[in-house]
Image (cartoon, rainbow, N blue to C red; front, side, top):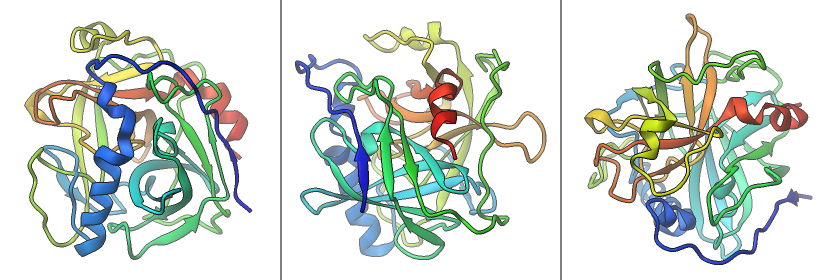
Length: 284
């Protein structure tokens, strides 16, 4: 039986800030995207400015198909970090309004509704200080039945070491997702993964775009060239490769500007290195 440990935070509604619209992720992004993709394995949201990718390019990427308590279907993304754990955003399970009931994890597939290895989550645990209204500590750990083996298309990402103190500002990182390539994308046949390399920026630079504190628990990528995570890419990974074939997870997609994916604004991720004690306590 699915055991869900999820902190439901009750607080006053925020004024409409730069990222306040992200509070209702499922209504605004996940559910509409799922409807379109399910209809023809196409997409309503992709990494903007990206290139088509295959599961072997991003073997750590997990697609998440979520059945909400009102029986609507929504989608998100996540990162495989061990044989039975996937790290995603807390708002993928509860966004302050819509609550998940069943989550299916899709691994090793370019398509969300067919193919690959599919596991129904047995447990979803949000970070104990996750606040879906303020969108802080926006992480959740998903447990699945253990995988018997890995392959070229299913392989966990590495986590940062405790001694890694780099902010990664100035480095190039890979954003990965199933989403839309433009704000006004039309439907296409053949749902596929997309990825794009984006510059990591300093938190000081990121703060200038949002009217909310960008603290050390957040890592931001530049929106230069209109590249980056787009609507519905909640929970997807931000990856840095320190050397060939070493895919290190440094961020979990959380928010972007309400002006849209092509506004040239930063994308905010939860900084994985800030949450290592909690992640390691649930990783295996």
